[in-house]
Image (cartoon, rainbow, N blue to C red):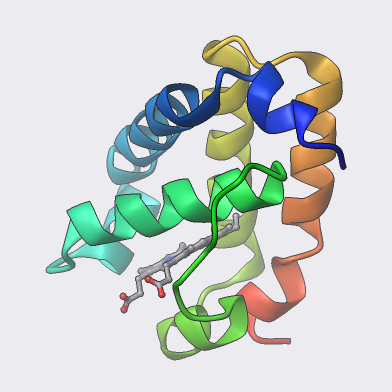
Length: 119
Ligand code: HEM
């Protein structure tokens, strides 16, 4: 992926909008909200911004845990993962990210399914 994905989608501010929109959607879903109860959401949002920025090849370093470690204790099922991925895709599209960029980002996210669900 070239750096243009991060730039093309509008840089840091755009990624922040996407991530806020994404968590609003996730936390409005009864199936998912329980996973996030009692967590420091500001920190999670900040890590997610870093993570998406680095997936989009932006000039940002991700400093959180690796994906398998971050999710290992959570007992996430495949349908939970699919629901979260769908919200991310919607958040990208509804914040004006173009089809090709959405596809490139979602391809990277699909590759995280096995580590996130602990397979
Ligand atoms: C779509 C792929 C996903 C990506 C890219 C992703 C990304 C991340 C990132 C970057 C963190 C922060 C790790 C850190 O702070 O060190 C995190 C933590 C977390 N994720 Fe995910 N995640 C994904 C899927 C999911 C799913 C499907 C769930 C649950 C249904 C989930 C629930 C959580 C929770 C609860 C935490 C906080 C863990 C803790 O602090 O104890 N994530 N995720």
